[in-house]
Image (cartoon, rainbow, N blue to C red; front, side, top):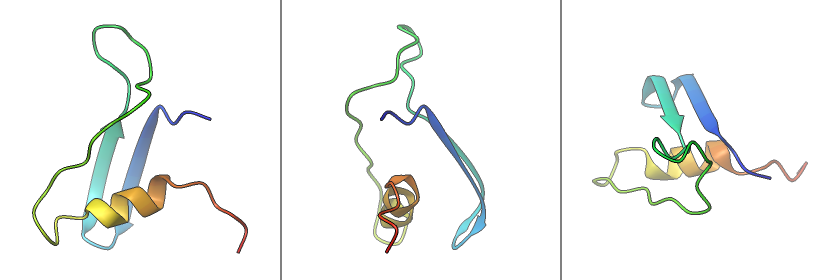
Length: 56
């Protein structure tokens, strides 16, 4: 499964966040991506929202 984009509204520190994982030139979804940011910027929140649910 590949996630093409994610939209987060009113969750923790994100009021309205749109993230695309699609390469702008190749028009393909990337196999890998890197999330960088200062402490408290929301890196973990973004990764939790993109992780598939395990049903637990």
